[in-house]
Image (tube, rainbow, N blue to C red; front, side, top):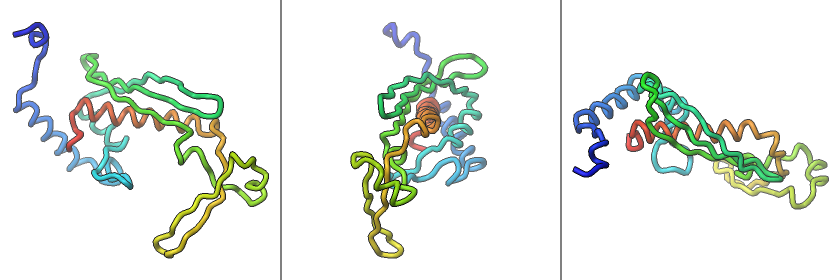
Length: 179
């Protein structure tokens, strides 16, 4: 047995099966699709959402803590966050997850112009016309948009990075990615 193997305390297949069963029981008894997990448009499989990560964290007594890296620049806000999952009773670090969010993401970068006047008064490099298609009405549409102020979204962007990191940490720690 090598030196690394001496310090590893692997779980038995029975213990792993018990953990999977517990997660499935909690999902069936407590978690609701559309609240705790669900399918994000454009993805293939259901995803764990923050409320679900909180339920699983409570189930396994995992306390999240965060390390925030501010990668913001002159005209944008960007945070990279590591969420550390610590076992509440023992203080043992169980694992980590990373998350990032930026004001350069589509949903934070642009907003609908409040009027034609605002759109026309906005410098050309800070405005656009977004084209789309309404499936119900079966017609194309366009929306006049202007760049959003990054600072207006700073707190939201930080919280979103933390949320993404917490979900990643929970999936890593409880090994629930396939469930």
